[in-house]
Image 1 (spheres, helix red, strand yellow):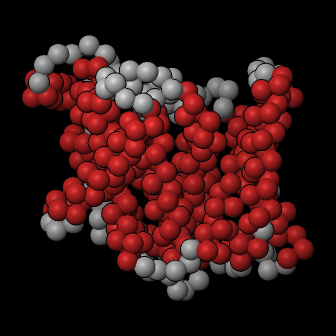
Image 2 (cartoon, rainbow, N blue to C red; image 1 turned 180 degrees about the vertical axis):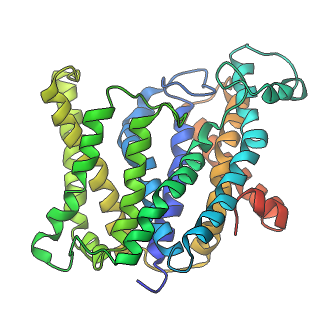
Length: 371
């Protein structure tokens, strides 16, 4: 795969775009989030529960794919230096500039603070962790984890690169499908051993289930890209992967609707759920990659522009969604128009900020991780 694989750019753009829709939906449902609409509309949960299990795993997987291409022309130290510049610097900038408005509007809506943003902002420098304090990385936890993963996994990636590891031997079509599905096993083991003891916190130091699972998907992206014929196999079986994913979600939702969810207080249910949930996530990621490889392996001005803009969009998007949400929360308006205002407003303001305030200026490009 010496030539650029444009379908990977498409997946990256689409995956980050899904986050804007998802976080706009968080404004309406009963799940905990920073600001809430004046009327809870749990109908949004229908599609959000389908997207939620794999949306971030897909991002980590695609990030691992990107590492595979980045390391082709860089040494390990060059790669770590480049990742530090593009991840750590925007993370620090984001924690002091981008994230605080989210905490401010959350406190205003909860009536935990009343005053101007200028009066609120000095509390950030008390360095008391959110939610007690105002110091947090919020949605930028993804950037923090990605930087740590790059440091931790680079020695493994260099070893794979040096040894030209081809342990999957995917050129044999008879068992390549089974080999790819077996990637589910380490994911299931992670679920069995860690999910009950480490709830997802995004705080890096006590988030071992989420940390390990995300790291595995990051490594999988690198491994798959370094296996000869991997993308051809994924493209070939794309309909099978999609069918498995659809069957699992339909089966799960139908069973829960008829019999009710079974608590994971028994080893049998834990083992069964671990396999089904991880198979669902992995097959959806493979299906998305397979269909993108088949239909989206082309370049145009949209994907070229979006591939550069997607990272600043990610850094900006949740603050924009929270800000817009705070101001429209009490509007007497139906849910769908409000949802569209959030989505269009977030995309629109992110575009304006990127195009006119970030893209033209070297310093701003540096702070937002743009090459």
